[in-house]
Amino acid sequence: MTGIAGVLRLLPPPAAIVAVLALLPTPHAIAGSQRVTIRTDDGVTLAATWYEPGTRAPAVILVHMLYKSRRDWDTVATSLATQGIGALAIDLRGHGESSGSIPAGETGDYSALVHDVTAARHYLSSRSDVQPSRLGIAGASVGANLAVLEAAADPAIASLALLSPSTDYRGLRIEAAMKTYAKRPALLIASDDDAYASRSVKELQKSGTGIREALILNHAGHGTVMLGRDPDLARTLVDWFRRTLL
Image 1 (spheres, rainbow, N blue to C red):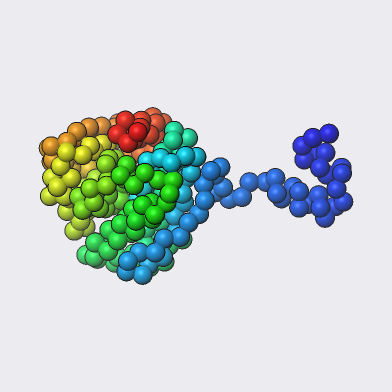
Image 2 (tube, rainbow, N blue to C red):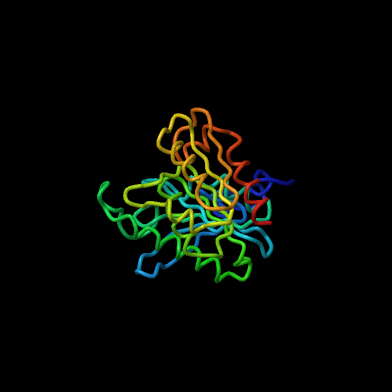
């Protein structure tokens, strides 16, 4: 006899309970993933999840929206790993399970959040199963702006996918950074019901000399919300990184 029923017949009650618990999935458990901790250069401890591709491979950093968490990226991260690309989803400082605090209001200093993406990049470079010269970043809303600012300063970032970027997000201006990003490719995505992000995509498409693919979705909302409203978006992101990193 196999399965849980067979285990219960063979084991005494205490052991049977343990066996059932072992067979039940834990919250947020995803095959091939592990929780990791990352320390930033200014002393913040970040919680992150590493999605294992199973071999030495390129990798993508996934950066969430303001007031959200790394869990927004579970579907994309799992799909990337399945396609042979590692994924590192981080909780920005003050979000999810990370330490630190969220900047106060629209006038707060959001530039410190760039340290979090830099720390994620250094973590990936320390892993023997990651190709350190084949890294990408996908960011949503503020995460998109952070992705551009990090990539402009780091030539190892070979590809970007930006969900609802803004030319200026609470002081995080990225027009100059996109020009510095230069010849490297970027996928720019916004929804037609998100006016500022749609305008920003059109403006950013003109920045730099590399490939700038723009995608305007239909009534899909903002940032990672679009992943739930457009069933094809996760696959689009995975296909983009397969084309630009593999």
